[in-house]
Picture 1: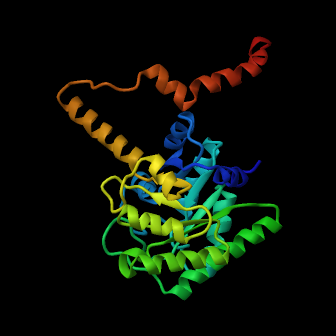
Picture 2: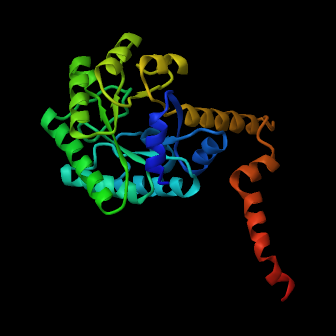
Length: 292
């Protein structure tokens, strides 16, 4: 089964899937090891991890696809890739969708922000016109259908950031048209209350995704509440990166004082990275060592 089909099957379940977001292959492996059914490559976190820079359109298409490929090579669960604005016009969107599919992503997110895009919970966001937004999703869906015709597969996660600049009604209208154009999953970014979240889910068809940024604009509700509202996925884009950064800063400050804080022991660290699996697999070829 393809990871795209695995994601479709997950979306058929009557639940809200908690989705911690990864930023590299190791963070994705930890998510899978802890039993989560899917993950998302956070553009915010990947930009910080890979180039040490904010998510303001600085990481290129090639760098993003390469990061996604490294992640899918390391895990078996579905990965949703962050395709940002598609990196150009509608034809660039088509190339972006095809590239993410080739990299092994189960879905790709395409959004309606004006390039260079910004993190959805930071100031200064602006969106393109309706026509340009619809052309991006139309191109993404066309690319998906071309992939299917050739034996490939990927889902389209359509995102709108119109709530910030134009209000919730405009955001819902855009997302409804994204669904009409054939998007598989809808994502209205940054509703600012539980009532707005309910408006989103009650007025839009199909699976919806919530984006929970600790300290961001959207309420950080329990998973049961998100399911009751109508979300199929709850993404947590910065939880792992924020935790990792805090742990590293704490350790660095402790080491400066010649202290050693609590940390994962060496045996577990080796096992989670894959040393033990490597050694076990390599035993299949031990006979060649004995005969030489």
